[in-house]
Image (cartoon, one colour):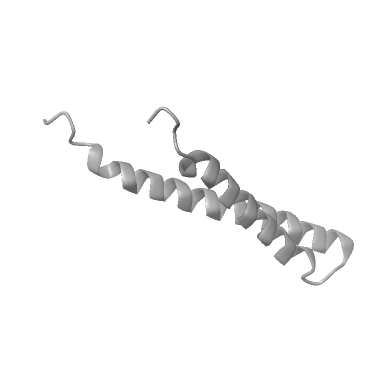
Length: 73
């Protein structure tokens, strides 16, 4: 096997990490909003708020993990 045979999958690995992080953030915070809606008796107030917070938090975490440039590079 060549020494660099796994290098082609690095981009796919990062793409799956970003996808999973975005889906998890929206699901967790959206689910929290859904539970708050049920608990407080609202009909769809906190669910979209939670999903927006989850998406924003996920985008920030993706930036921290993949978006910043390494100063040593």
